Every structure is written in C-alpha cells, then in structure tokens.
Length: 83
Image (tube, rainbow, N blue to C red):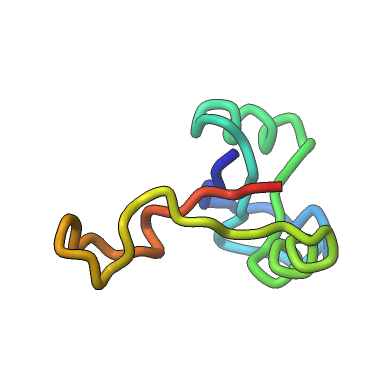
C-alpha cells in the first residue's frame, strides 16, 4: 500500500476542513483517485498522521537509506506503508 497526495478543492474526510491536498492510501494512483472521487478516502495531512499513529501503521523504506552508496535518492519520496 502506498500513500498518494491528490489535489483537492473539497474538504478533508476526517475534520471536514477545506483543503488544497488530500492523502489517500491505495495500491495505485488510479485507485487513489477513484476512492477519493467516490468519497471513500481523502484526509488532510493532520488527520492522516492521526490515523496512521492511532492504527499503529509503520512507515518502512523499500529502498536503501540516504547514506547508502547504492542510492542517493530522497528517502521520503521512496517509502511504502506497512500495516
């Protein structure tokens, strides 16, 4: 499962605040967009963090660390969600 950031002109599905972006957990970006359009997903950053911490999610990198000689990509753009 991955986290996708989608542009939004709507409201957060958690706190109901107007937001410019929502975050959706899904397998693909297309699935994330479909879930958001159906109103089944889409949280602001604050609500997404609350959900992840309360549900005991763990963010795990599937790539070498930034200090690794194999790969110097930004760690935060290459993470996956494990639950």
